[in-house]
Amino acid sequence: MKVLVLGATGYVGGALVERLASQGHEIAALVRRSADGAKRVPKAVDERYGDLADASTLQAAITPDVDAVVHAAQLTGEQGTDLATISALAGSGKKVVYVSGVWVLGETDDGHEDSPARPISLVAYRDKVERLVLDGGGSVVRPGVVHGGGAGIPAMLRGQAAQRGTGVYVTAGGVVPTWTFVHVEDLAELIVTVVEKGGAGVYHGVSEEAVPVTAVAEAAARSAGVRVAAEPWPVEEAAGQLGAGFAQALALSQRVSAARTREALGWRPSRAGILADLTEGSYA
Image (cartoon, rainbow, N blue to C red):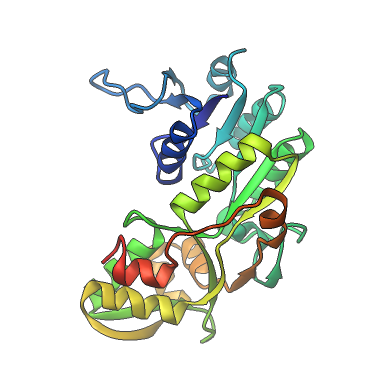
């Protein structure tokens, strides 16, 4: 298949490109033109230049030779722009896979693929984006907190630990949240499987359903070589440094299942979990 990837230079998109290539798929990438004219996605058979803030350039990039489109880029944050972009995708007649996230479910201790969306403020209208994709016959993949490759939110937690001399976690009202996690390579494997044989519907990219954030903070401290402990960081204080929306997201407690996804697609995540990845893997 020829797959047009949006966000091919990003964290998830980069892993997705590697997986698509290893599975023998052709990759086209929608990117901004580099200043020196160099190719930005070496494994792409061609690069198409445009901006996700301009739906017309996306439409121009969806040529007849494209079999599927994966939106693995960040939304622009402008509701009208993002909904116009997703509408252009949904109406393209191509298979569309949109990479969303479990934060769209809000706080939950039993989240699953059929749970109603109750998005937190940081992803306030992502449920509308998902609905456009689903109504157009596309697929939505919701990953948990992504780790691997020494990047993502766990890298930030490790950096906070190194700066403070101990692990830290954001809390609202003293509650210890639990987070869902997925390794970026397992996630890429899932997205490719959805491209190949997924149908219209929601799929969850979750390999660990509920890990106490105190355990993650302690592992981040151990990874950073500082005092192994987990100190609470009140969400009101964290908001001053991280922004209110992101601080709220970090204080969010979730348990989210991917049981239906695993059964439907035979997805079997096999990479290291978050604690091992922090202490012995890509963050060590």
